[in-house]
Image (tube, rainbow, N blue to C red):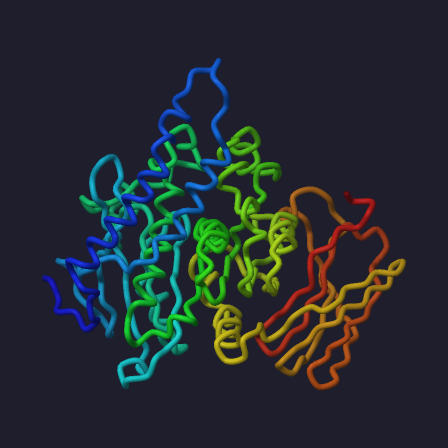
Length: 430
């Protein structure tokens, strides 16, 4: 049955008119998309600059969308199941299912930071994920970006609702459709609108709303953070850009996909990313290689932190269980900067030295390296202790690379938390 909302709603009619105005502006921008992509082979290629502008225009969805308690779903542990308005798809309005929760501090009249949460492949809006962020003092909204709810369905994992937008079509397999018909277009819009909704709540500190996505959600996060500059921080987990030439299913699907390479690859807009970003992953990831991660964080001018969690595994729980994402977000909200940042990474012969600035005490340092070649997720990665010295917030790590090393990075550890240097490949391995 429907539940009475504990969350204040934006003004109804005025809010709806403002959102419709936003959609009208976007519709004007998109007037040429269908003709561009449906052109005959002998006609000129699509206007990629126009399509890039249309994707970037999604960042202007700054008006909070209308939302309501999701009928038929029960509130639980103070969390509310909701539907909020998405962009039209195939000529009809859409709604997005989500779980919305506030921490106890917000219910006591205190303004709190927030975070938008985006699931990966096979996932949905996860109540547990919201609860974890609430326990760390953050308001959170976990959204379902494939037109689904969180009700299991043996045929398609999760039940779709009648007002859902498009489901994901493989790996950008809908790139031949008009831009506004593509899944990534709607996934980005849903994420931007969720940001607008969360930051509109009186209990939420709009200047401290972040974004986290896991796997495909990490790809969406990597895309959105170059489109919506209002986020205070971003945490792409596993997922990233620069996937068209990698040696797995992404490279096979995207090697000739010009729509991905020119419009949707997060690298297209990575130079716009000024917010602090935590790139959270591990060496054994079979989907998103370390060199693609490096391409992304090297292209972003804002501060970046890398956390390569040992034996992390790939999955939703594996992505949200480590304390690294929460510690990073806490440091941004409290101090305005990541708790640890690499300042310098030097290589002289086989001698390596890294300089970090850390707000936490470091208890050990490691060299992570491989002697193998090929896709990083299939290599055998080894660890060795490295010497380190901490003087207040300055941490110096020194070690020597083994002979025949092909790739490596350094990590410093503070309890369960890890901060890693940039990924490097040996000259002979390139």
